[in-house]
Image: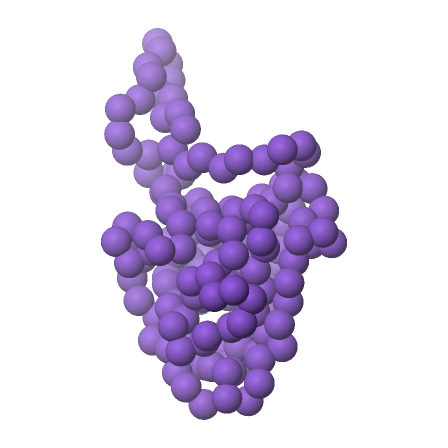
Length: 163
């Protein structure tokens, strides 16, 4: 089984998949009031209609063996780990056929909002340290029913993520 070593999250390394911003340590020019600093529009996402704000809880597996992946053809997906750093695996769009040899895995610091572009392969984020990861998922309403292509990987396509 192929292995994928987790790497640090950097703007350059993550650029083919989307963008991110650390919401707990904002940077850049803020709009300031007497008692506040507002950091607007740090991550942009387009949604035509309702947006769903959902929770996901993911248990830490003994081994991070990935047997399924998914993508959304018409929308980006936003994920933010709330209680732990998370491990996120991604691969560039490939016309609906998984090419897991091109998969990357990143450590996403807690409170960092990730935006994955449409068609980027991924699945649930995984906890780095805690027994269970709690994360926020932001998608257009009912994406999980209307625009979610899940693929079961063959034995040759499966991979293990290692720290």
